[in-house]
Amino acid sequence: MGVFSGDDRDIHLITRGNVDGIVSAALFLGAYPRSRISFVTSPTAGAKALLRDRVSNCVYLVDLAIVPELAEIVAERRDSQDIVAIDHHQPLEPPDDIGDVVIIKEGMSAAGVLYQHLQSKARMRKLVAIADLMEFYETQVLRSEEQIFGRSRLEEEARILDFSWRLNIEDDLFRLKASSHLSRGCWPSQVGTIKRRYLQVLNERRWPRALARVESSMRIEGQVCILEFKEKNRSLHGFGTRALVEVARDHGCGYAVMINQRKDNSSVSLRALATPSVNLGRFVEDFTTVHGLGGGGHPTSAGARIPTEVTPQFVDEFQALVALQAPRFR
Ligand SMILES: [Mn+2]
Picture (cartoon, rainbow, N blue to C red):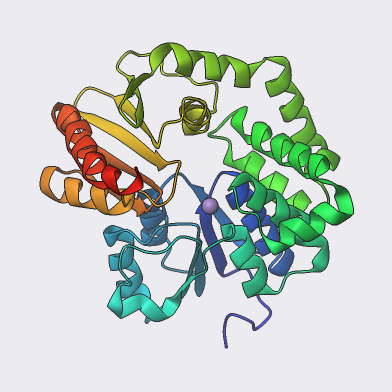
């Protein structure tokens, strides 16, 4: 029992802070109104959040790749806490000792998987459709909501929610308020605080400015679009990899790599734009096992922290792997 016993204060959701994560949080609050929500930026940050929470009876991990450091904590905690890991990308390899707590369904957003798992109310379907849309999945839910509301409405609502959190990407209190409003099944445009932030991002022309900044700073090497920030000003006006992916797509690249160089350590993000692709999660895991510091992810989306001195090697090894894969698709 425990999980469904009625007291939902000891249920904790750990998820991402993007549209998929905010919609997941809305679904979760729809089912467990008093539950605790944590938004994290990576599976590593998710592992830290789980590590800190020894008191919740039940912890859901949603949209977080089960990287080794996360798998380790889940394995350690699974006897004292109910842990459910919900994801929408195939794992690198099913971790044997925690295979039964991991639910993975491909071809839909994480919110879509959670919607099915929680058997959420039908009024939440439009939000799931928005999450599917943002994550580029043409699902049954998306098609049926499109029949009712039209494609352009869904696209507009997805953009409103996506722009809104980007106004201040660190503001988790906003995410919490937004998902709590959305948990009643309304549209993002009907929530004042979401709409206001969207309008501000729109008025400040942040999206076109982010695209312009990427265009002027990136380089294309073969199939890979690389954006490397070495200087202090690394702002993409809140749009980060989303702006890079958009530009990479425009230029017909197969991959996008963002490198934020700092003094000793650099953070890297990789995205695949075409499938099938090099398995990014595996590449990052292999590289960081040898060179540090840590990272991992999904086959089409991964991230890591690496020592700054090995960033050229990181790019070279990735290019070598892409070159190996390439002939198959010619
Ligand atoms: Mn997702």
